[in-house]
Image (cartoon, rainbow, N blue to C red; front, side):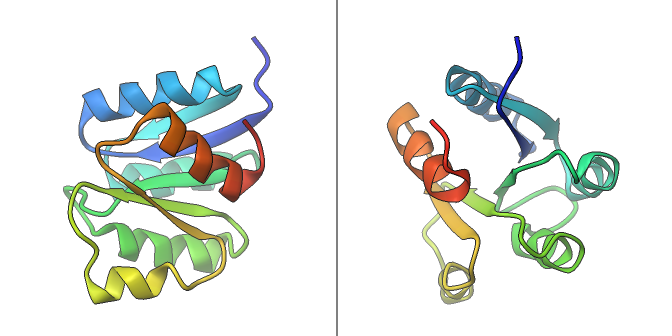
Length: 125
């Protein structure tokens, strides 16, 4: 199957990665997956020209999602970043949403809420 878009999913919980992958593929979006910030950086160095957006958990085992987003902004300034978290947003996280190309998806998420944020971020669905 040929997919129209590619999203990097950065999430340490394998069940959430699999759920997001299934939902995104139903939207004709392929995925690359990373379970840590270090692996995400590796995937973006390797595949950054092909990736249309990054879906990143706010809390990862080796870094915070906003620190990873800072790196993404330096290396891929136009790359949409979709933060997702099961926690309430603190003031710092809310401020991040004011940045261009930055979106938020609450956990737990549904196919509809994921679709809505992906359409806003990369215009597909």
